[in-house]
Length: 109
Image 1 (tube, rainbow, N blue to C red):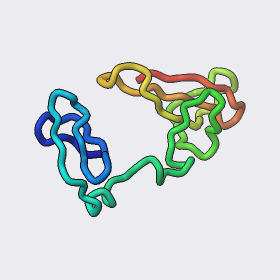
Image 2 (cartoon, rainbow, N blue to C red; image 1 turned 180 degrees about the horizontal axis):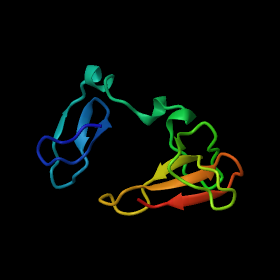
Image 3 (spheres, rainbow, N blue to C red; image 1 turned 60 degrees about the vertical axis):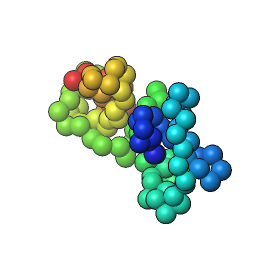
């Protein structure tokens, strides 16, 4: 992702130029193909790189938490995923799935 040197807005590719998305700015620059190779895009991500946040997500193989207790079976280990459910200045919400009985719940930090 490239940002405008003049106003700080995001730039987008248009033919052989990078153009500022801020209509009031209007800045543009020549596209640097060598620099673009260094950028990381979501196109190269695999399903394993993406954090699951869907209710039916497959939690198995995700990180495990050992600082939780399942209310149903008392197990002290659960897979978890993170999702930003509030504003950016709030901590993310952890979604858990018990490794023993499969119960799902959320935890707030």
